[in-house]
Amino acid sequence: MSRLNPHTVPSMEVDRPELLMIGMDVRTLFMSNSVLLEKPFGARKITLLNPVWIHSKVSGKPFYAILHRIDVGIVIDLEPARIEDPALSIAGAVQSHKLAVRAVSHFQFLPGGDVKIFCDTVVESVRQIWPP
Image 1 (cartoon, helix red, strand yellow):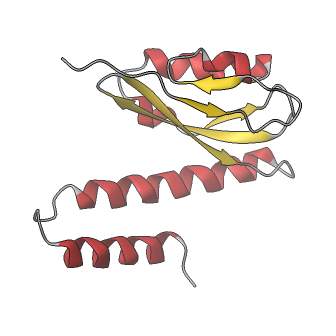
Image 2 (cartoon, rainbow, N blue to C red):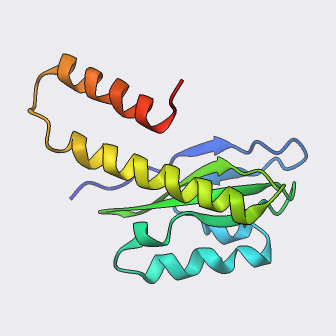
């Protein structure tokens, strides 16, 4: 079994010099109302609970947390969210997430080794999610 090497990335907050590390408790990065992150961690089908509306503890900026379970833990994609109307914004994020999940599941059934087919499929999927 391979061991994870610790990886760090600089914090994006100017006045906060600490590093973000793989394996750290992400709840420390978000406001207390972001405890909504805890519920998906225990769920069997984590993707059904996406996206999760959270706020940065330092800046207060809202984000959608899109959670993905992998064999060694959970990966969280953070997407900036608009604060005008969270209900409308979340509905749009849910729809985008569903389209992305559909596209990714389509990729899994592509024949291996053909980069052109893969690239064409990615382009078509992006066009469906974000039409011109």
